[in-house]
Amino acid sequence: MKKEVLSIENIVLGCESCISDEAIVSCGNMFVEKGYVEKGYIEGMLNRDHSLSVYIGNTLAIPHGEYEVSKYVKETGLVVRIYPNGIDWHGETVNIVIGIAAHGDDHMAVLSNIAIALCEMETVEKVIHTKDVNFIYELLTQGV
Image 1 (tube, one colour):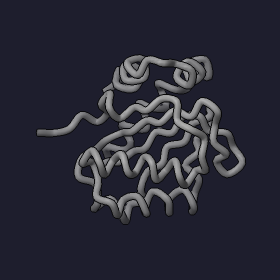
Image 2 (cartoon, rainbow, N blue to C red; image 1 turned 120 degrees about the horizontal axis):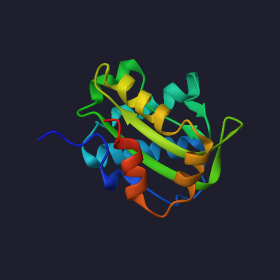
Image 3 (cartoon, one colour; image 1 turned 180 degrees about the horizontal axis):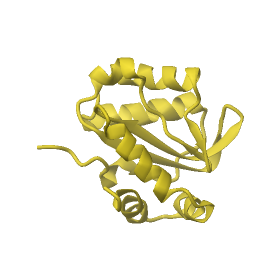
Image 4 (cartoon, helix red, strand yellow; image 1 turned 180 degrees about the vertical axis):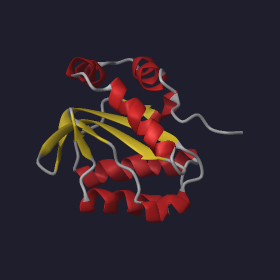
């Protein structure tokens, strides 16, 4: 049975601030635990951010693996971790970390949906401060 790209269990609110690498590893470990990827994908996520930051603006980072580690992806999926107090991400503040594991061109549709859902800072602020995982789930799955 195919997994949902985003499930409620893959949304974590109120994460403690940490360094960007720890946030990436947390996303990667969630992917491994939920069966979306094999462990080798995590190193590719770290390498991708180290070579070209995955910070995209609006206090949002989207860690994902390099092309070379796509062989470790079993299912396309998202994990969402909210850091209300922020993370220093290469000199930028990040509050929302959305990990992406995707097969082939799936990542383009996923990225497009995230960009549309979180393009307004007002919406980003609601996501950062919500206590309702259903709100985030509905926001990020409405275009899927």
